[in-house]
Length: 173
Image (cartoon, rainbow, N blue to C red; front, side):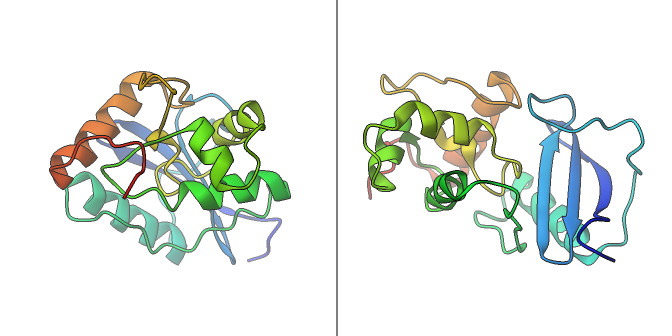
């Protein structure tokens, strides 16, 4: 297997079909089928024997069953810019059951005036759920922008909050 020939698979999550893509470095894509900025799924196989895809499916299954809060699947975010990767790394530090705003995320990466650029990078996150972009909300606490759709974002936040027994606190610990 080579980096230019990723392995791909479909997986049926409780919130709809997902497309998973991995290479030898890690999971490089996890999208809800039909989401904004997602790939064309027409020729994606239903299954994959790729060990990283199998691990991602196992962990996603545990996540949706309420038995996992953090993911161990290796992620390859090499396709993003340096700025995007800094935002995606910051997203991974938002714990399950908590949220952050775009402005708080911009401050965390040392770019407090780059709120719109941060929002754009969040929206371009290629590894949904494992890089938890669904945990970012508007400054007024509203659910805003999620490439997989706002109903999925609400469902994911509700799942995590019910598992944690916590409420949103904008990422403060």
